[in-house]
Image 1: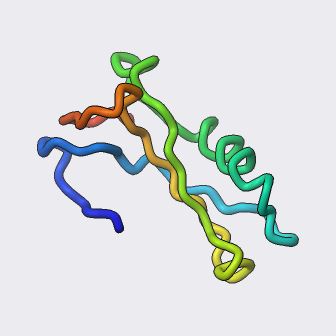
Image 2: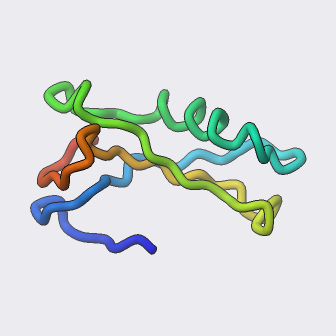
Length: 89
């Protein structure tokens, strides 16, 4: 479950972008690699936050495939502590 809050309220992650996985059979064991390869180049982290932010992504399950192929890319503090303000440009 995702709860949307304003950036001035402490939060554990910030939505960054989406990525559509390529068509084909469900990637199963390759899902993490595909999500990283799709999300990382699309993350536009503020320079002041570089090195302090990690990728967190969630994508479709085997039951959702192939109807849903969207991966949701999130930026989250590397230390795991809630943050306030924007980290994504």
